[in-house]
Image (cartoon, rainbow, N blue to C red; front, side, top):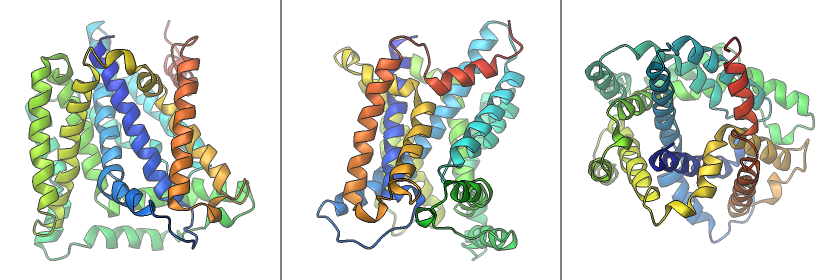
Length: 365
């Protein structure tokens, strides 16, 4: 594995860090208690709004598409059609998500596993066709149509109608004393609410677009070319991000998603370029380690924080300010980094990654 691929692992670790802090700011989807605000709460609020929320998930989706291409391309080089095996891999990921959802209502693994079948269906299409489809998804076509029709809230109203029609109501899991009661609600109403949110917010289109953008980056060998190419892409992404960010007050709502797209085009190539610099390579081992254990760390961090915050666990949610919970999340991330480094000294994969890989290879010699 090349240093540039190691740098992608490090970028994935940074995306995981952003997702953890976004979850922490949202109190892991538990209720927000009334408490005195800390002086640093405003700083975390700004970081959440402009750095962590959405953007970390979009980077994760981009890297998901890139990983899909790398696995498929590696199999093709061996003369193997990996599409069926990858579909089975997605099914397994869905069940990892179901297990995770029992403890945490905001799981993204079930969503990624279902939408992940789309890149499999597009695998045989030409690069040009995928680029066109990617652009259409990133342009938010349905949101654009609703804007032009004068009904910008159409998707949200549709998702609310689905929620009401299914009788799904929000539950306050942090006030429940029973782990089983909270977990059962997460597995039924919780997963459904996640899909309602993804559809109603329009995020479903940009997630699919990011999957395809990652595929295109793999096909074009973006991370295997000269480093100067990464800087040019990052510059283009920075221009898109700056223009969208600066025009938030005058641009239509549907164009605000280009802020996230520009951020991904800026952050991933720039991060890969920086982390692949010879002067930094010896120091990125901790990030590379946790980047290789992403599935394990993503699931365990939410389970640990659910136990810390919920009534069936330590019930700390009412006593932690935004700053407090964000600080605890960062401590947890450091602990997971140390665990990942220790674990990978004697194992090739993280604990959940190893199980996922073994189940994926069922039936193969």
